[in-house]
Amino acid sequence: MYRVCLMLALLLLLSGCRIEMSLDEAPAGPGTAQSSVPASGNTSAQNESLSIFINGDIEYDESQINLKAYTSLQEGALLKVILREYPKEASLREIFNDEVQPAETPVVEELIEVDSKGKSTLTLERQADIVYFMVVQFNPELQPDEIKEVYGARGEKVVVASNVEHYEYEGETMIGVTTSANIGMRPSWAYLQ
Image 1 (cartoon, rainbow, N blue to C red):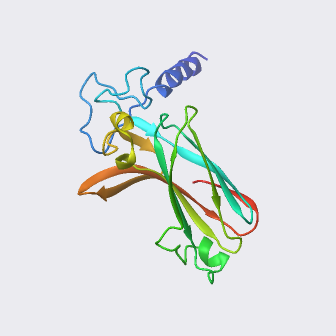
Image 2: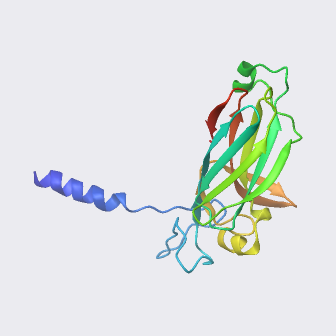
Image 3: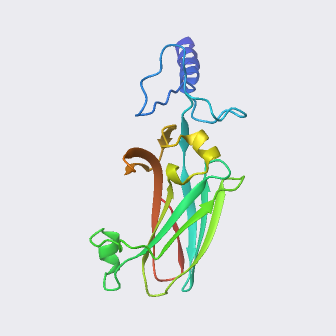
């Protein structure tokens, strides 16, 4: 019984210990820890690493697409929403099996701002007989200066995120976050993934 209690106590103690490291930074030296949550009142600390998530619900009918995005980004951050059409002749099977790609040229490209609760909404017009591909992105180069201070001008303070994307912008490697969803023809709903 003593061993079981000791193992449980050790497991509880160790389950709270976690270190997250950025791929762009050298490992932390002794005595330096990195947090995955911004410290209140000190969001511009040099060694601070942040995790980001973006998810959301999409409801659509024959004429409109309603996006409700939820994120851990700070108020004032900008999300880029891109809507592309799949070719009309493409079957749903081809689309969902990734046998056909959406058009390169977006039908819509908009920026939406994150509110104090981490929420952003957008309503778009749509054609009923088209299947769409929606992408929602956090791009560091599009952010206001106060948001760049938090996440880094290149996104270098972003450590953990689902759907992390490394890309080139003006000769620099940027770290962003991308999530997406297919939007069908019939009235329904989808989730950003």
